[in-house]
Length: 200
Image (cartoon, rainbow, N blue to C red; front, side, top):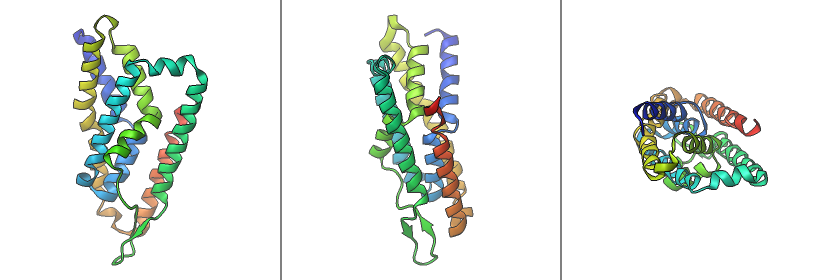
């Protein structure tokens, strides 16, 4: 891959993994509710899930969605339902701490939940389809795919971790049950707002 294309790919990965989207909104909320260490399975689940999705897109699933609009519509409906469910889990109080009466969501996403979520994450699909269409070189597909995958790991993990660390820095502020509740509602609204690309 030529240097200028490699640099453009790095910029693409930074922008796509570092800007707001369902994963980053969930990681921000997870950091605020559970801290960085307990969110690590979520972070690694996103990374592995995106790698599997990247491979699937490279093998032709993206073309299937382009050729058959019915599959694309079904995927959009699934994406919307998944985002609504995740938003609901943020606003629905599932655990009250006995000492303080503080309301918290029960637990962070597990590794496999985060990995599987990528299949119904509209931004993940957009990232992977665009990465393959723009940066993969048909004459050297395997090498291109390895470079893209490696950059999504090396650049993507620090970018998404930043969102979680920012959320973790808010934990002390959110010890108050009312503030934690408002924060989770705001995160749920932002998560629902990330559905906007589905209707484009």
